[in-house]
Length: 86
Image (cartoon, rainbow, N blue to C red):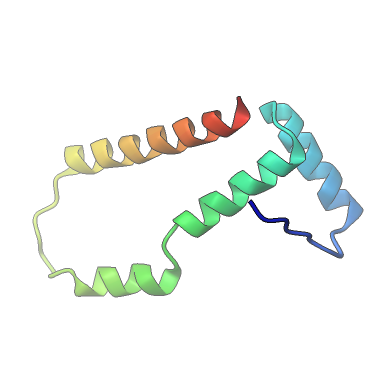
């Protein structure tokens, strides 16, 4: 692992992050690491738009399948986060 230092963080922001971490039962480092992981695992707006524009218009939409996919993604994120909390 590497060390990342963030400078010039307002005290109120640090305290709010510490409070949120405590509410989740993790230390501040784990909380911030999970925030970074969640952010970088999301597609950028540019890549999301490119993917959306590449899809043909009028393709079939299966709402049930979309819900299953969203739930699977949520469950995976919860599993990853719980793995860091333990």
